[in-house]
Image (cartoon, rainbow, N blue to C red):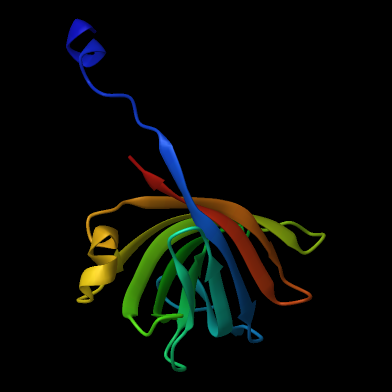
Amino acid sequence: MRVFDALPEARLEFLGNVEAQLAPAHALLDAPFGGRLIVDVTAARVEGPRLKASLAGTAAADWVTVSADGGSGALDVRATLKTDDGALIFSEYRGRVQFDPGGVHPVFVSPRYETGDARYAWLNGLQCIGKGISNARERWLRYRLYAVV
């Protein structure tokens, strides 16, 4: 174990709060490779010290693969963000959701970002994580976003 003692500790840097509004899910529960929920993102906002952005356009969705027992899902999200000062940022992430009968689901995400705008180039090398909740009845998602540094 001494080899691992020399490795740097990971720490988290807060990037912002994320909130998204979701459309009703399209359910393909009998798909041959697992149940699917396709959920369009209708609005999104990131509010943080260095990043303030909203959803750009309408090509944004989560393609959820539902577990065999229906208790959890694997997230697969793509969206484009536009910062308040006009930069475009591509966002993609995987994650997990634990479905809760009460309709409020714990969510864990691992976003990555890409941009050609020099003002936000610092995002290109980050691995991020987030933890939050999704409300199926009210169709929203909220999580805190962190960079692993």
